Length: 378
Image (cartoon, rainbow, N blue to C red; front, side, top):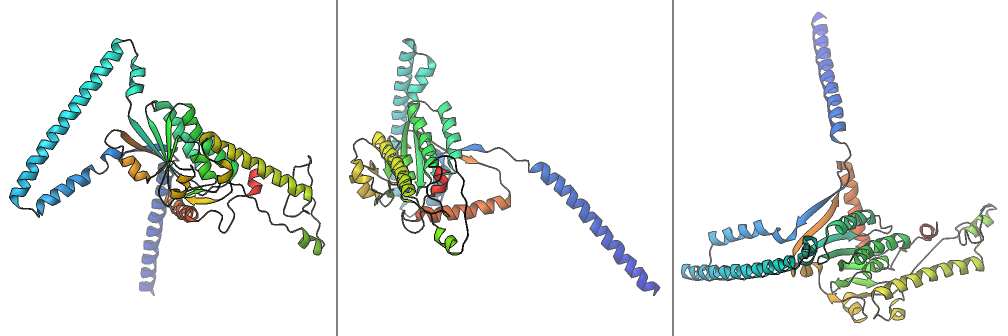
């Protein structure tokens, strides 16, 4: 019995000790984690496209030298030719730099201030990415990025927006297109690149830009407005359920899910949709005056190759090809907004990204409607 009690108290003491240390460790971890996980404000990050493959090129060159498949004499000839090419390139760059220095010296001599000189010689291309959901929640990041660019970009610079969106609620995408309009009002050139889809509200954003570039199989168009509301009035009436709606204003509520739909109410809703459609058409006509607006504002969508013939797109090319074509003459800076996240937030964001990719890949007009009239007229 005594031996059992000794073992019991030994196990008990060990258990208490372990529990005590575990509790202390947990408290310390919670305090430390709480201090460490102070919420940080979203911040901008930058990636320089011009040098993103530099290390990879070096590694490839080392591998090629390690496993040469050419005769030694051929390798020597190529190295010699390459040195000559590099020397010629350096001379060209030196001549170009000398010309720039001479031009700037002349401008300064003529009394032009340094700020104006810098504006004329900047050669930056800033890249933004907008992947829009139905409610265009991503516009919050876009507006911050554009507000930042308006303070640092020069008139000679260019803003490229890589746009992906199947459209959504009118007010939200109206705000998104207004953000791009801010760039134009500031005198900055804006190019929108569409690799997959810019439909409805997505094209509303693109139409504001100075130029639209799209990949061959990107979906473009769907210039229309849609609203769909289920109505349960007859079910309520059949089951003797009353629904009381109180409003002040003749047209405060026209078509609702639970009240009887009148011809006057339907006509009012149709008039509202028509007014939005006309505003949509005007925005596109202002941005692209050469299009036949009545022919393209039917709600139809087209592949980019067909959309180009209708004047909806300026050039058929992927965003990668367009940006790579500017690498030799411009500094290309990609701007993104990042927020500090814990594991749960990252998991939720991953699921949200997959959902966006799925909805973004759907053809507009197929399946569920993209617009919600309650959101539009609430």
